[in-house]
Image (cartoon, rainbow, N blue to C red):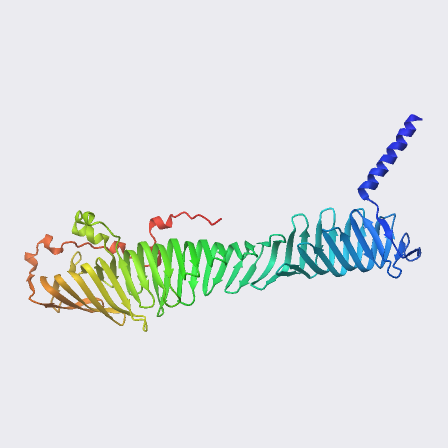
Length: 535
């Protein structure tokens, strides 16, 4: 007998626990109740009567409707007619129709569905609600209104705990200051933070961002973008494996294989790290920086460790620092730094500043080794400061100015190991159709030149000192030399040439340093550079 009592108590306990877990749907109010066992077997048909609506209750949720089919044995119902599913202050769901299972706590709403929470409002045609997992899902076009943002997509899942949406298929965000188009993104309604998981386009007032992966703070219009990320920033197109952008500060930075395409100024800059400050009209690119300027169907390549761009459009100033190398079809060059004013067409090639004490300790050859150098055809020219001037209309080289320790060298065209050489303190040169036409050297001018007859017979070595020297060129080779103001020199025959006198003091042939293609612009150290990714 005691065993039987214990078994009955055990069954009642299980029933009570199951009832508490499942929590049977309660009927709080109805205008009237009828049964129609033929058409709706097992259902209590609860109807509205005048202002007395049907009200059901389940596990903290109150459901109002005009008509409900309540299935007690299945712990479920189907409601229609201005259905209102109210879960306290946390959730309000309205629809034309609602089906609800009290055991699984899942609801299916359709027809003018509106889901409202304190932080947002969702509108769609059909919605699935899982109260156990706190998830709402729709696969028909949905529209979310969240503060200043309006979000739309063909499919979406809302996670009520973290207050997060995952949108898929034709996702859009509309805001007075920007628009977002994506194939898949995650959106947090409390913080308005967005994470992209597929191809996405963000369009602001003066910028657009394209990426496949990234993060965007819609409140502050700033974010981090990866996977073929591209920013069009007021006419400057920035590519990079990873990009950071902050609209309020007018700032963008990029790393890993970056490229900045300035469509207005016809220039492209590449490197491995770059920053752009739009309000200041400036940019800085470091780590294998390379600038390419399109000049009259030709390209001027400028490489250095660091490149900066400043100034308004069409008045840009490019500066390069440390191990500068330039390459163009008609000129090559090396220097420690470069200054290029695109408005005036002036390029300055400068050496690294050194103390006078250090300079005095060097030989003439060591001093010239520190100087910037340029090559025009077969001509090598060095000096303390080198200025190249282009005609801004024709975009062709117009003039060459060198100040301090001018040294021009050219290989002898007939005998290997011999070099024509010219020294002086100042050089002024001029171009014709992009080729060096003539140069004028003044102050302490010295020329060492190998002379030949018309039939290529060696005449002798001309070594002359003069206050000024004029050299004319034909096809980038010396064709005529003129001396001014009492020159002093003579022609030395072959058998009287002394080996030590075949080179002027300071002569150094730097052809091994000459860049002949774009790859030569990068040193071996450049090619080994390790890049740190933006986090």
